[in-house]
Image 1 (cartoon, rainbow, N blue to C red):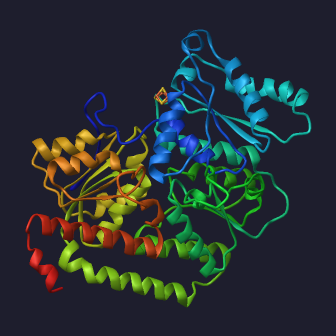
Image 2 (tube, rainbow, N blue to C red):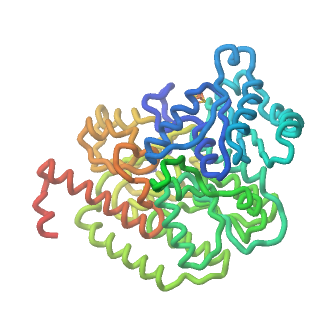
Length: 462
Ligand code: SF4
């Protein structure tokens, strides 16, 4: 077999690719309007996650902590959740949704966040906040398993299953974007608008690219409302773009409310964007308009200019969120590049059963490795000690030193990308994303050719 899928053999992690589950639940929660999550754990479980969000988006986000201390870690600290909910409701009169997000320490000591939610619903909310709409939602995200990716998936399911309620059909589709950037949401909304498909875009974070307005600074939050989440049960169907970031919620809506679900493909590259549009067409009966055929043509033209001269046969390593990594690998293959190493940073044992990975295994005719539960040492060690030769690295900013130390050009993609300006504004999905990705890869390779004096003269004559 040319394409091998295997788990990292080492015990322990050196330079993790992901952070822990509560981070994913926090990312889902900031996508909801009038929502502030309380993370039940130490302050660092929020502080470092907020820092990552702020570094990536260069914006501020609201997240709260129950601020667990040593005594709570020994004797239990559900009383801290009770106080935190009260303080939050007093200080933020607009807040209606409060997920209670557990962490490693509070799961280990067995704090009963479901029980405390029941107690608060029957006590504090009835007595002190009678008449106010408040939803307390327990979200279990122990960090000793999974990753930020599974945390996001679990939280999306918990939010959807809390709110979804059957009433009249709304004629819309639910679009669960997964963990994307504002530029991706803009690109997806553009495709929906061209197709004239009415949609509820869920965990909608386009406004994370926030303006600085004359009336002063403010915090960023997403635009998905309680009404949006409630109405998910009445949609024509659900498309979850990412299998591991929203797939569970799509399946839930199908099994609970007969809302048909399509999971994937992540619309990265021409092929996957075509499939996404065909899925929209099938679900809604709306035709694919000429305007999108033209956009597709512009994208194919842009790619054709680059493939044979610059991208073909370039060896690439890719790491990050699994749907992103697989989508990028598929796109690289379409560009005649050679993704030789894919690093999936968590212990999800279902990766080898992913049909896209099985397809890669069937079709790749050179040596490719897919490492699960991987860390960035898997990449660095192969380069430094095992002779792995790469022309390009695709991944988030946490791997920047592997690129810098080993003189390998790198395109920042995924989350977080804090060491390059404004990347959250550029889509990687849709035809626009295909153009941006291919041109970003080509331009990065051009700069590398110039710095290394490696056939840089070619750039005068193409
Ligand atoms: S690993 Fe545990 S302590 Fe550290 S941030 Fe995650 S939940 Fe908090």
